[in-house]
Image: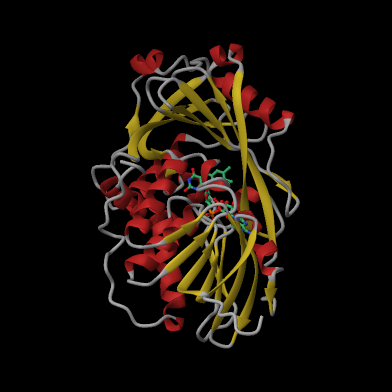
Length: 397
Ligand SMILES: Cc1cc2nc3c(=O)[nH]c(=O)nc-3n(C[C@H](O)[C@H](O)[C@H](O)COP(=O)(O)OP(=O)(O)OC[C@H]3O[C@@H](n4cnc5c(N)ncnc54)[C@H](O)[C@@H]3O)c2cc1C
């Protein structure tokens, strides 16, 4: 309109999504002394980042698909998070029972756990076997056909609480969070982005040097709203369901092998007197909301009660599902790479970066890699903090 001045906010970086990746990127950008705005359409951690297995781990099973670099990197991040967020991330004992019919044999477990310990760089992270005389203490595990039980340590968290803590840390460094605010579109200009979003029923605009697409399973839908449109990666969404039972386990987490297909399933103490059991792997179409199916719930119940017969009598009090973003490919989702892929709209001075896939555990190092890729597009600023040494407190604490 003639004569009207539109004041448009300008940021160094804008981020779509306040899941763990959006939160981590906001923290890293703000720590680097840059201005950052985060849009979240629903709530902090309302997507996959509240529906994970809640483990801060290297991923013992990824050794089977030889993802050694990923396991080492995640174990390194586990060590950091145990130090930086002791109220949110804690080590717990894990048990792996081996029966006559278990596909993974004791010698394989010895190799895997030795390698896992070596990759963790922590010589005190010993593993061992539970003496037969202690088997009756193992939360009612069936001992018929049991050959041995391995014990090692890994870490558990509350994924949504961790995400909120990282958002809080970013806000303390000056990050601007808009919730609920929905990203609508972006125009990629020669030297930055013109972004449109919806907030309070109104269309708003802002500018940023770089837009980071951390929309989780919606990443490719976001790319469809960019002008010009960057080429989307071919992905598959794979749903993972967990069930919650009102049953307390005393000793720790169990890593069991589903009797039907040999997949690894976790049975984990959750919120002091409950059990979290997961997960499954079921392909879903892009854009679909992950929703637990009856077949997945039955599969998890049957798997858990096969090893812990008393659980057969426990009702499922809750079930939830999240979607993994995996590279499209042949074969079972189990063996597909689980590392994060960062894709920019152009090599030199990117205006947009998209985060595909990834691990809750690796969010901080992922954010560091994002910063390294977008740095050429950002103005020079003095860093104000270092995410390798910044403590994380529960939000509101
Ligand atoms: C079943 C399952 C179990 C897992 N277990 C583990 C585990 O134990 N340990 C581990 O390390 N990793 C685990 N992972 C991986 C980990 O959970 C994910 O990598 C991580 O949570 C993904 O976070 P994200 O921020 O990329 O996505 P999300 O958490 O999905 O966040 C994306 C956000 O973007 C928002 N958004 C989308 N579109 C828009 C828009 N237009 N405008 C504004 N906001 C928008 C969404 O509302 C959402 O909040 C698991 C994953 C699954 C599926």
